[in-house]
Length: 551
Image (cartoon, rainbow, N blue to C red; front, side):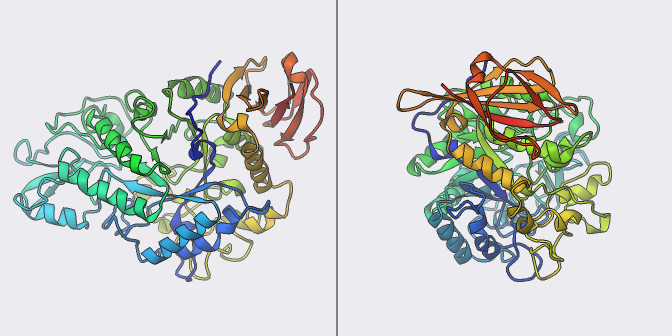
């Protein structure tokens, strides 16, 4: 039995549904083939307008919109307090924020703390001289000897983490691309400058930050070698004992959480590696002194198996300290879309529908990646169509990131309603069938199912902030869990989720207490959505059902 953690007062982000927008790909307003802020604003009613026609999400997370050379598509920032001209202006951002808030839609910024672009004025100053005002703002070190780097550390995107800078005659550290030098977070002026950046956006009215790669902030500045381990390439052939996950990172998170005490509406959402010591849950601190939410990517990289989801419930939720809050995420801009990952050896469409049920009924705050609600697939791209350097580096041995970043599919037109020009990445081949215009009018579509589930979740205290208990199932391929919450009138609200992960029909014997209930919905369009519960229920292959247990 697993109990979902509770936070007194039920903060808005506990019951919210978040929607990640990759600005390059959401909506182009000026025909240059690149999505922009005015394009996002033009589609706010799709996300939330208070009517059943909208998706009904509560918050949007914008991937980086800062000025950038775009070597890592915005995660190499050259100015933290402005907007890249590709996306618009600060005035465009203010307009977007104002219109989002008018609809009751919160806006979360992506904040890149670990590194900047090598074109950022801070780094240009730092690399110019060992005596420059910002000489210590980045991680610099001498080689161990002639032509020997300071340590054996390898970068996440391949190659050494160290690059020689002839002007300073030293090496600088970059945990990702060499165009992304790492900031020295043990230098107090760096922290002060980044906290000023946070205040700049919070004072403009943003509702919080998604923090990129937080477990890389702390390094052992003595530069000891990482121990060897078996892996398929340089980065994975090291145990990352010294180049990340240092205790100072938690000190930094505590400082940022304290800064947010002046902005009680704001939320901090962290991205940490799955193999960080103590797991991502470590960044909740004591539950109320570090981050509000931390991504756990086990489901994002998991195959379609009941035992993996069962283990997630047992391990992840129970690891979160009292005062912390779980997150549920299946897809994002760095990983292949889950509809293809889950569908590798079975019915992808049926599994995507069952995954939608899991997304909105598992304990925690759900995060959608744009187009997920349509069933958008990973595009089949040719090498000459790729834009992402990380994808190019490991192509075709790894799928990379570009296939999951293709433009949003708004309608069945030639450019899917995304742009009147040539899109920065090709439109996916399935846009004629998978698009907002067609799915919005089809009650059996995946988009319609997402809308129903979001509406159901919003109406249920149990599904938003209730506890969670695993229910034993005779069939190992089935996952059953119950969500429960005490209501203000003293009654108990109970919801049961049932999902068949197999490719065959299974008979599920439900507990006696569940017989007094009704099926609220099935993910299988051919199934009956409502009715009384029988002792033995038949679940079609990859079918999920949501049941309200009546007292």
